[in-house]
Structure formats: C-alpha cells, structure tokens
Length: 218
Image (tube, rainbow, N blue to C red; front, side):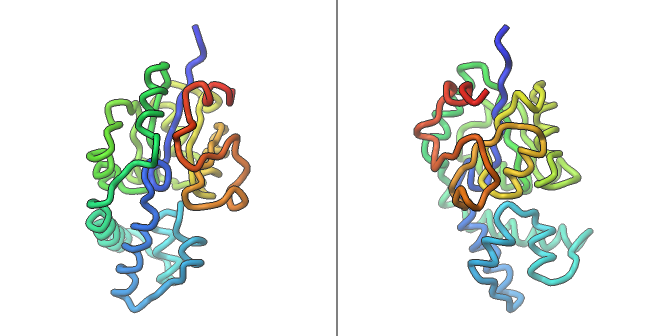
C-alpha cells in the first residue's frame, strides 16, 4: 500500500490574501482607541500572531479572559464585515486541492483565526467537502508557534507528523509546522523567504503546484 500523505493549510495568507483586510480591521479597531500603529509594527506584531498577543502588544497590557473574548469579537466582526465583499482564493488553490484529493491525499485546515472567519471563507471558497480536519483558534489551548494545532490535525487525519506537508505564510506558522516535525512550504504572500524560517519549498501561489510536487518532497 502506498504511503499516506496529508497536506494541511493555514488560512490567512495561505487560502486567501486576508492580511490587508486584517490590517484594515485592526486600524479601525485601534483608531477607535486613538492608536495608530505603523506598517512596520503591523508586519512585526500582527501577521501570524494570535489576537491575545496582538491586543496585549498594542494596548501595552495583558489582555485575557472575558475582556479578550469581547475585544477579539469586536475586531473579528469588523474584519468579516470589511472582507466579505472581497473574498477570493489565492490563484490555483482550488484546482491544487482537487488534484491532491483525487490522488488520495488527506487534507486539513489549521488556523489561528476564529472559526467564524473560517466559516465565512469556506462559504465562498468551495473546498470544504475535501477537508478531513478543520481546526480554528477555539480548538486549541496553545497557539502557533506551538505545534498543537498541527499535531491535532495529523491525528484527525490519521497520519503521523512525518507524513504531513504544511502550507504557511508567517514566521510563527512555519515554526509551528517545523516544531510539529512536518515538511513546510512557505507561501510568500506576506513575507519574503528571508523573513521566514527555512522551508522545503516556496510558492507565490498554487499555479505550479500539484500532487506530484508534494510527493517529491518526501
């Protein structure tokens, strides 16, 4: 029997180019509080980070518990409102996922974003039927770069970490995949190669990706 392979996708910056819209939502959120972070601060302290980290960093105090839930809900609701008219998958990803599935690949999504964001995107990007595991921020205790979300995905998909390929676009996300003992492909939607830990492969989009290319990583 041929070896099983699983491919696990992050969501923001990997399935869709959401980061510019997260920036817009955070700018609106912070401007309501008379704060104006720079682009550099956003690049360093927002992309790939959990909301608890982002809010604590920019509000300059620990944000946790009930307050975190309320502030997170406010910001993510803003994001969904701003982003909904613009949802579009990164070029080639749907055809790539169909190719993976037709070759017997197990497929999952593992995001640090709330499930409501994932639900919104999956309502417009037709890949849900191919997914054997769907994990969002509510489903884990530790956020990336901790490997929990990827190790749990592997268990859900019935594979071991060394059978998995992760697609990630952020430093903490790539680190999470590597910490899980998985092969990682860097998606260069938010960062350059130099800004990410070393990956097996780098892609701008999915036009050149195929099951054969994934198989070649093993």
